[in-house]
Picture (cartoon, rainbow, N blue to C red):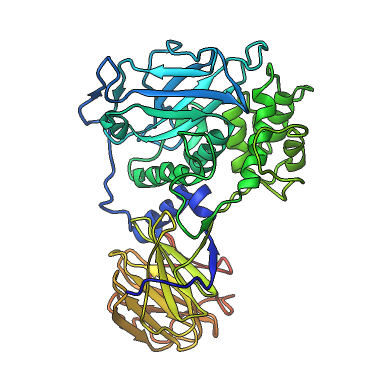
Amino acid sequence: MTKPTNYSGRITLEAFVTHSRQHLLFLTGVAALLTGCGAHSFNHPALVVPIDGTPGAIRGTAFGGQQPIVGASLQLYAANLTGYGSAAQPLLPANTITTDSNGGFNITGQYTCPTPDAPVYLVATGGSTGGSASNPNLTEMAALGSCSALQANTSTTVSKINEVTTVAAAYALAPFMTGVAGMGTSPVNTTGLNFAFADVNQLVDNATGRSPGTDLPQGASLPLTQLHALANSLAACVNSTGGTAGDSTSCGTLFAAATPPGGTAPTDIVSAVIDIVQHPGQNVAAIYALAAGNVPFHPTLTTAPNDWTLAVTYTGGSLSAPSAVAVDAGGNVWITNRGANTVTELAHSGAVLGTSSAVLSGPAAVALDAAGDPWIANATANTLTHLSDSYAVTGNASGGLDIPAGLAIDPQGNVWVANSGTTNLSEFTSTGLPLSGNGFSGSGITNPLGIAISTHCFVLDKHECLGPN
């Protein structure tokens, strides 16, 4: 393993921020790589935080832009681990903790964690800013992490809830959310939800309500102006008395613009930003225009973006003309560098774990086997290389390959290859022995560039479907 000293390329991994659930579902359905990753249930003994709030006390403030939110109700929710978007579990008695005249709150009462590692998040609802009437549409949130971490914290957890923490949480957690009180994952993908909560700490520092977060690794950059621009648009609704989709109010304009095609208009701010994250190209200009005038968060955009997609860009690891990406069951990202004939491994956070010293040849595709070890297609050598997790070569394969451009591994561990230089597929055992000679051919398959495994058929770039052997 070689540790990088010079940065020679970059890769944008938008999926880290917006699609953690989809990536891990892909790994589950295609290569069964999440087996044994530790699914969790609600059967653990309950954890009770002492009534005096130590440990486990949470203190903070709720702000609309630069103004405190007065009279907002606080609720601490635990994500549900039984289904995507399922009802989150409120951990505090309703309407018992509200923000004071400075927007402050102090959670020191008793609350119970349904499981030690259930992720939890704070929500502020209602309240007013600047002496105006209460805003019934006001919701803001901050994703805090595992309940057990809060419970074990002997010092008070500090959190500032504002539009920036809300945007950051929504970008990371939208695949798991249906609304302010709807957050959950399937029992087999708790790892994905935990990764999403970890991503929040790259986007924002919950203690200060500022972006970027303290966990953004060296070599990573965040489009801060775009994140702030969306937060500024939300602030127009937060600092108002509310509204209904389609009326002339700031909230009404936000809710109408955020309404998904053919969907239902949101009625609160968190639901609106979730809709925006899930439909980033919808009514972009109208949403951006809400932030006209003296905005609270800087730096920000000076014109409307093309869409509201938020991508974190990672550099380092000797990246050079990166050509393919695969994610293992531990959330680590493997990237082939066609310009350097190497493969780089990043942690889920984007931190560089290492770069292979093995000489590859025009690496064009990478896939992970059940052990989490990469198979790499060498397009210019018509071979495959198998590496261990320490980047040592553990096997090779050849025979019948013609400019291999796509890889997939089936549940039996066999390696399937799309040969872009011809009209067929090749199949190899998990040890690199050819199984199919010159490969499978099918009607309409021409210069295939990619391949994936489903439970019923092999799906190619031409949307052909060949039954499994």
